[in-house]
Image: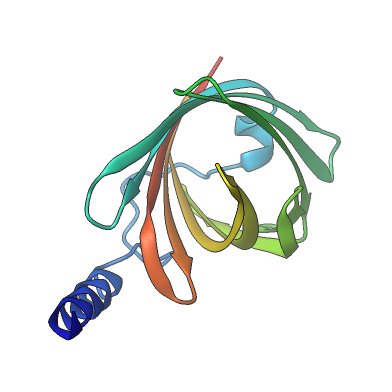
Amino acid sequence: MKNLFLALTALVFLASCSGKPSLDDEKLSDREFRLEQFFAGKTKAHGQFQDILGNVSRRFEVDITGTWDGRLLTMVEDFTYADGSEEQRIWKLTKTGPNTWSGTAGGVIGDAFGETRGDTFNWGYKIDLPVPDGTMRVVFDDWMWQLSDTRVLNRAYMSKYGFPLGEVVIYFEKE
């Protein structure tokens, strides 16, 4: 049992050392990701959660309706999971500077904070995430890249107590 615990600890440590994106990474386009433009109106997303061992355990679709009033971006996200369950999350994002954002949503602990740089947006927050038997408090390190005027790729690293749990990959398509 002790050897199994040591092996799992080593695996988690190695997984947490894997490379993650940075806002300083070389940009692959000359796009300027403007959340308020991309997410205003209707957007459709498809995604899945994958644990640190590579097992896909949940797939979903999201219908997003966004409104921008010049200062506040409101995003109503209607999730439909592959098992038929549904969830709604409403984000209220405030533009706090030319490239910075803060936001709140149900389940989010405190404020979420984010920054755009070129075609990239990085967003971090702590959330009580609904799970089949209640909620689980996790931290998201969320990365988005605007691939075109109508497409965004999102990769979110999920952790608990500093240990990686897995990743969520989402593909957004502007309607």
